[in-house]
Amino acid sequence: MNGLGRLAATQSIAAMQFINAAAFNPLFGAAFCGTTAACVLLAIASLFMWHKSAGIFHLAGSLLYLVGAILVTLTFSLPLNGALAAVDATSADGANLWAGYFTSWMAWNHVRTAGALAAAASLTIALCLPHNEGAA
Image 1 (cartoon, one colour):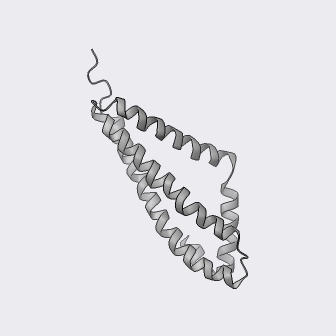
Image 2: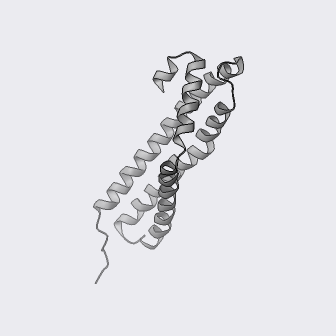
Image 3: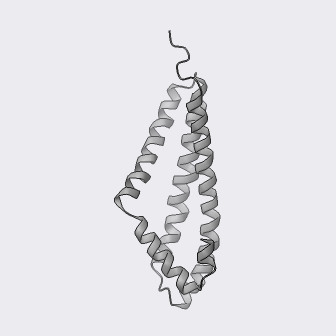
């Protein structure tokens, strides 16, 4: 993104439009939907593992990912990308949109990255904790 920020708005918009269009493919869809479903199921399962040390980290990691990565993507990144997709890269409206898009997209992408990293850390901690507590 920093490289795109150094280009003229027309070039940046065109490049980002191509990047966004190419990103939506079956592999991306499977990864996006699969991790979302896995985290929803893990969050629910963690409620039944609450008495185990790993339970809180499973819940925290799942919620951090669902809110910090998925919800941010759906609420901020995709609408920004949709607005950018609809604009003519060579228009004055496009140049005006790009300035706000770049700043906002970068800020929300940092939030999304922090959420995903915190989720990964929490889920990694959960993997390192005993999962058989209370077993006979």
